[in-house]
Image (cartoon, rainbow, N blue to C red):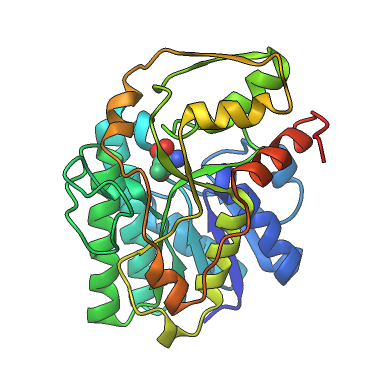
Length: 317
Ligand code: VAH
């Protein structure tokens, strides 16, 4: 089995930051980035890069064998809002890519897999406050359905073939290095760019839409924490609830206004309101905190500070 690491979907929001962090930990030459196209030139030119269609078992296998890969992070997916526009494409990409990688692990061609689930696995009948690890899951988006089915496949491959696949249910993730990419929670990224560049934001969710969120540094930390944990500590092989902060667009706008006093916001809900309304307001991640010692670092204020500072607005210390 190989010793190197492959990130599929490396040009995406999480994939690009995960690639940089893994390269700093493992060495640039030991981390191969891949995506369907060269959409992030900084990343493409920063180390080994391959064009891979995640729907192609053969292309993934060829890359694994060419580069002596043992661990795969599968970060390619169509997210919630885009998935509602292209349901068949979302199902095809999100499911075929996962089964390709799980089968490569079942065939002992690779030894370890990370696959991201999402709070989108929950639906309107799920308890909304402090959503438990195990509860009602009736997702109403194609993206959520693919994540729910994907979790069952991960647990099946672990139980029946001993595949070491590990997964976490990411909340909305906020970062500054890449622009928003088709997610419902991406309002919480877009708002920072608009606040700095235009002083105003037309939010596509209502002011009181509370959603579970996390700053990217915490999401990357959690990903490496679960992947570096002892196999026996990873007791849940479907996917772990993960939480950090929960806030509404109004609460985020108020935090931004502390540093950009003239910032204004309008609330003009669109089709993404129905998606957001189907998701929890907050998540119980006790299992992750107990099993592999997860704990978040960034809260709403420190996340806002970091975003404004990195995007070019001096913050009040
Ligand atoms: C989305 N950012 O909005 C993703 C995430 C919990 C939401 O999975 O689709």
